[in-house]
Amino acid sequence: MTVLPAADTPIPIFTTLKEVYGSLATAAKHVERWDELVREFETKFGHKPTYVARAPGRVNLIGEHIDYADFGVFPAAIEHDILIACASRPASTAAAHPEGHAPGSVVAENLHTRYTRQVFWPTRRHTLGDDVPLDAVRVAPWHLDIDKSELRWESYVKAGYYGVLNHFFFPSSISPVPVPVDILVTGNVPPGSGLSSSAAMVVSSTLAFLAVNGIFDGEKAPTKGELVNIAVENERRVGVNSGGMDQSASVIALPGSALYVSFVPSLHAEPIVLPRDAVFVCANSLIVSNKAESAKHQYNLRVAETLAAARLLSHRLNLQVDSIDGENMKRHLVTLREVLARKSGFYRDEQDAQLEDLVQLQKGLVDMLEIAMDYLLPEFGDRTDISLDEMIGKSGMGEAEFRELYLSGVDVETTNFELYLRARHVFEEALKVLKFREVCLAGGGNEESKLQTLGKLMNESHDSCHRQFDCSHPKVNDLVRVARSFGEVDTGRGKGRIYGSRMTGAGWGGCTVSLVHRDDVEAFIMHVKKKYASYEGMSEDDLASCVFATEPGMGACVFKLT
Ligand code: NG1
Ligand code: MG
Image (cartoon, rainbow, N blue to C red; front, side):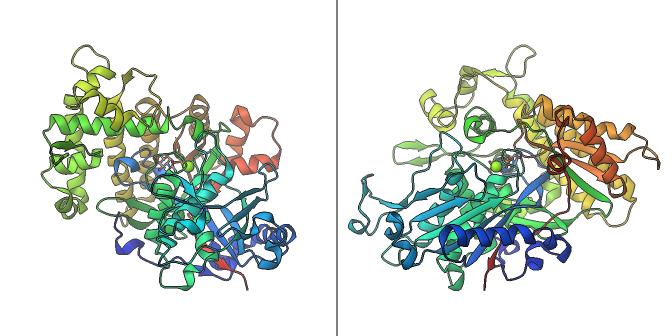
């Protein structure tokens, strides 16, 4: 991805919490956490931290599972965040640790007692593939072992470090070696809940390693857009073939605005102010979606299905998506967005100018819906799914190359694929995002009817995630039902003003987001706490961390301690 000016601003380096959270009132709620983090760092490591890297989670308002098809999405940063206090390890304390002398070694602690202390250091990966002693190979990329088979907290720390090492300390002939680092992590983004704790971990880890290595002091400091690109690359190292939505929201967000983020031709983020009376309330279904475990048969399978749908469409439409490499055909992955662009007759470079025009994009999407219906449904019968054999047959590719390109990252026990429903969800959802953006941007007009339109789009988005994309969960559907039923509650000022409710994030558990009138937020939160069965018997404190209103918050930063 190249980067457009919108994301081309520097990553902020702050020295007050008011700057970090965008207002004194918000900052006041976090002072204690920050103090504890700094204090504990000193207790654990015997020296003071020099920086705290901060990255927030995000809530996606609309546009689910379409970022990796290259369509625009609509997230906002939340107040919940990951904080990483860090400092280079002084020689005096390094002596106390056997690992203290390895270049770039990391001692990572977590304030959460469930996560144990981790020590690791990078090696250089020899071109022949073996790890060899550091000083033997000067021109080899850095390597860290990341366990993709289970979800480990330090994997996200390592993923962030990986990108820093290979972007800033490689090739080593022109870069110095990284310093040994002590870090202490804390966070309050609930994991596995669709609020992007993972992106917040990876972004804050990337920032921490950049900061301690002095990269912000030099000319090499990356812009926000560059940080997003590095963080996306980093997160894929944990084994999820994600799009770029979460990292964009976590890095680029500004207080008071949601973001319309688009990815083609390059990362572009447009801050958009939401209607005055709109408040978004998150509620946790308490079903934790374990990414590492589920990636292969859920998330990555959906990525594969949408890419396979794009392949079938491009074959049927006769689009030139592959290239010739000598004697051989070189196959390329194309996204549904690219098929749309090429179908409209524009190749990669020209498509931009044309598709900047969102009206054109809208028309293209409507066309694609029809094309998908013609070409992605099975030949016979009234089912919507097609068999593996039929899918490969319709791809124009040989079986082995198809399996290698599309199915190698997923567990395919399934023999049937819902390519039509997945593609239809993507095109319809992309249309909903454009509509959502348009309503938010429209000046004047009736505020109430704006909220109703936004809410309706959110409801439709949820129903499509559930029925067409099959990424919801029965409990999440219950929670959505509970939220929507607030519309029947008499608040004393009339019926509860809930405009829409949907799952947010990858799904298969996690959180919902509901659009509620500002004046009804408290009553709504009480209603949900009381009616969602899994909340029964929970303490007020625990409930408060399960159901909360969010205002679009500030993106990531580095805090410099004096
Ligand atoms: P979450 O909910 O953070 O796991 C995932 C992807 C996004 C996007 C959404 C679905 C990662 C890091 N992020 O988000 O890119 O595809 O699902 O819209 O996997
Ligand atoms: Mg995630």
